Length: 133
Image (cartoon, rainbow, N blue to C red):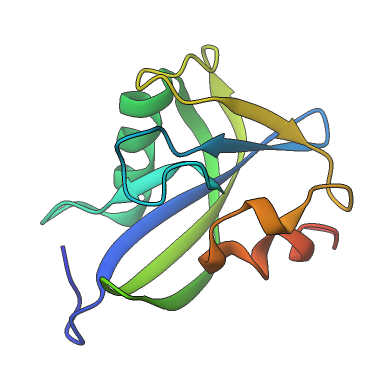
């Protein structure tokens, strides 16, 4: 789904467990393969942002977010076009992280995560996680 300005609407989850956040590497064959990101994806027509994130996490990583809160919005212009990212903190979930697309994942400690391996749209998000929620 796109907004009035033509930006693609995307949701991303900053998923927390034991003081660390989840990062997922984009798999081979997808745009930006090899870069790390916060899990999420495109919002479908008629879908709320929160519902889109819950659906994307279930589809891609097999777990269900049960406690999430909107954190911030960010526009980023990729060569392919603009995206409007909606970041949520996910502080509770059921199930285990089981990648369904062959992607690697890791739990990162705020302040020690290398922001340079994350997608350019996340360049300022990774260091922002050092601040209290």
